[in-house]
Amino acid sequence: MIDCFSGRVAGWAIAEHMRTELVEDALKAAEALRGSLTGAVFHSDHGSQYTSTDFAKLCTALGVTQSMGGVGSSADNALAESFNASLKREVLQDRSAWPDAATCRREVFRWLLRYNLKRRHSRCRYSSPATYERNHTPTTLPEAA
Image (spheres, rainbow, N blue to C red):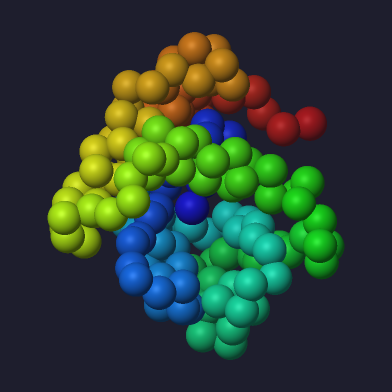
Protein backbone atom coordinates (compact mmCIF):
# COMPACT_ATOMS: atom_id res chain seq x y z
CA MET A 1 0.00 0.00 0.00
CA ILE A 2 1.73 3.13 -1.24
CA ASP A 3 0.79 6.60 -0.04
CA CYS A 4 0.50 8.77 -3.16
CA PHE A 5 1.41 11.95 -1.28
CA SER A 6 4.84 10.84 -0.13
CA GLY A 7 5.43 7.57 -1.96
CA ARG A 8 5.84 5.85 1.39
CA VAL A 9 5.00 2.17 1.62
CA ALA A 10 2.40 2.42 4.35
CA GLY A 11 1.39 -1.23 4.44
CA TRP A 12 2.81 -4.43 3.08
CA ALA A 13 2.59 -8.18 3.38
CA ILE A 14 4.44 -11.14 1.88
CA ALA A 15 2.99 -14.55 1.17
CA GLU A 16 3.44 -17.45 -1.18
CA HIS A 17 0.04 -16.69 -2.72
CA MET A 18 -1.85 -13.74 -4.16
CA ARG A 19 -5.19 -14.26 -2.43
CA THR A 20 -7.43 -11.71 -0.76
CA GLU A 21 -5.86 -12.36 2.66
CA LEU A 22 -2.56 -10.98 1.38
CA VAL A 23 -3.96 -7.58 0.42
CA GLU A 24 -6.14 -7.53 3.54
CA ASP A 25 -3.01 -8.00 5.66
CA ALA A 26 -1.27 -5.16 3.82
CA LEU A 27 -4.26 -2.84 4.30
CA LYS A 28 -4.40 -3.71 8.01
CA ALA A 29 -0.67 -2.95 8.27
CA ALA A 30 -1.28 0.45 6.67
CA GLU A 31 -4.02 1.14 9.21
CA ALA A 32 -1.66 0.16 12.04
CA LEU A 33 1.00 2.58 10.74
CA ARG A 34 -1.42 5.43 10.09
CA GLY A 35 -3.70 4.92 13.08
CA SER A 36 -6.73 5.34 10.84
CA LEU A 37 -7.50 5.08 7.15
CA THR A 38 -10.84 6.85 7.34
CA GLY A 39 -11.25 8.92 4.19
CA ALA A 40 -8.42 7.20 2.32
CA VAL A 41 -8.85 6.12 -1.29
CA PHE A 42 -7.44 2.74 -2.24
CA HIS A 43 -6.68 2.51 -5.95
CA SER A 44 -6.00 -0.85 -7.58
CA ASP A 45 -6.36 -2.83 -10.74
CA HIS A 46 -9.16 -5.35 -11.28
CA GLY A 47 -7.38 -8.32 -9.68
CA SER A 48 -9.72 -10.78 -8.01
CA GLN A 49 -8.20 -10.11 -4.58
CA TYR A 50 -9.19 -6.42 -4.88
CA THR A 51 -12.68 -7.10 -6.25
CA SER A 52 -13.57 -9.70 -3.64
CA THR A 53 -16.47 -9.23 -1.25
CA ASP A 54 -14.18 -9.78 1.75
CA PHE A 55 -11.80 -7.00 0.68
CA ALA A 56 -14.73 -4.65 0.02
CA LYS A 57 -16.08 -5.36 3.51
CA LEU A 58 -12.68 -4.60 5.07
CA CYS A 59 -12.40 -1.34 3.13
CA THR A 60 -15.87 -0.32 4.31
CA ALA A 61 -15.03 -1.21 7.91
CA LEU A 62 -11.84 0.90 7.75
CA GLY A 63 -13.54 3.85 6.04
CA VAL A 64 -11.59 3.34 2.82
CA THR A 65 -13.09 4.15 -0.58
CA GLN A 66 -12.15 1.72 -3.34
CA SER A 67 -11.10 3.01 -6.75
CA MET A 68 -10.25 0.91 -9.80
CA GLY A 69 -8.82 1.95 -13.11
CA GLY A 70 -9.96 0.94 -16.53
CA VAL A 71 -9.54 -2.66 -17.60
CA GLY A 72 -6.28 -3.08 -19.49
CA SER A 73 -4.94 0.37 -18.54
CA SER A 74 -1.47 0.39 -17.04
CA ALA A 75 -1.23 4.17 -16.74
CA ASP A 76 -3.40 4.42 -13.64
CA ASN A 77 -1.21 1.92 -11.78
CA ALA A 78 2.07 3.55 -12.80
CA LEU A 79 3.12 4.28 -9.20
CA ALA A 80 2.69 0.65 -8.13
CA GLU A 81 4.34 -0.65 -11.30
CA SER A 82 7.32 1.67 -10.84
CA PHE A 83 7.69 0.60 -7.21
CA ASN A 84 7.50 -3.10 -8.12
CA ALA A 85 10.10 -2.62 -10.85
CA SER A 86 12.50 -0.98 -8.36
CA LEU A 87 12.01 -3.76 -5.81
CA LYS A 88 12.59 -6.45 -8.42
CA ARG A 89 15.64 -4.70 -9.89
CA GLU A 90 17.29 -3.91 -6.56
CA VAL A 91 16.44 -6.99 -4.50
CA LEU A 92 15.24 -9.83 -6.65
CA GLN A 93 17.21 -9.45 -9.89
CA ASP A 94 19.85 -12.07 -10.50
CA ARG A 95 18.52 -14.20 -7.65
CA SER A 96 17.32 -17.53 -8.98
CA ALA A 97 16.60 -18.85 -5.50
CA TRP A 98 16.73 -17.88 -1.83
CA PRO A 99 18.00 -20.27 0.87
CA ASP A 100 14.56 -20.06 2.49
CA ALA A 101 11.44 -17.89 2.61
CA ALA A 102 12.55 -16.14 5.81
CA THR A 103 15.76 -14.88 4.14
CA CYS A 104 13.78 -13.48 1.23
CA ARG A 105 11.35 -11.75 3.60
CA ARG A 106 14.22 -10.22 5.60
CA GLU A 107 15.85 -8.84 2.44
CA VAL A 108 12.58 -7.31 1.25
CA PHE A 109 11.92 -5.86 4.73
CA ARG A 110 15.44 -4.39 4.86
CA TRP A 111 14.92 -2.81 1.45
CA LEU A 112 11.51 -1.41 2.48
CA LEU A 113 12.96 0.18 5.60
CA ARG A 114 15.66 1.87 3.53
CA TYR A 115 13.10 2.89 0.89
CA ASN A 116 10.85 4.56 3.48
CA LEU A 117 13.37 5.95 5.95
CA LYS A 118 16.62 6.69 4.10
CA ARG A 119 16.26 6.59 0.34
CA ARG A 120 15.99 10.04 -1.18
CA HIS A 121 13.20 10.55 -3.69
CA SER A 122 13.06 13.41 -6.16
CA ARG A 123 9.28 13.63 -5.64
CA CYS A 124 9.98 14.31 -1.95
CA ARG A 125 12.43 17.16 -2.62
CA TYR A 126 15.27 14.68 -2.22
CA SER A 127 14.30 13.52 1.23
CA SER A 128 12.96 10.15 2.33
CA PRO A 129 9.20 9.53 2.27
CA ALA A 130 9.11 9.40 6.08
CA THR A 131 10.99 12.70 6.38
CA TYR A 132 8.81 14.31 3.73
CA GLU A 133 5.68 13.31 5.65
CA ARG A 134 7.15 14.55 8.92
CA ASN A 135 7.95 17.93 7.31
CA HIS A 136 4.44 18.23 5.88
CA THR A 137 2.21 17.79 8.88
CA PRO A 138 -1.36 19.13 8.73
CA THR A 139 -0.09 22.43 10.13
CA THR A 140 2.40 22.88 7.28
CA LEU A 141 0.19 21.65 4.42
CA PRO A 142 -1.73 24.37 2.62
CA GLU A 143 -5.47 24.18 3.06
CA ALA A 144 -7.37 22.73 0.14
CA ALA A 145 -9.10 25.33 -2.00
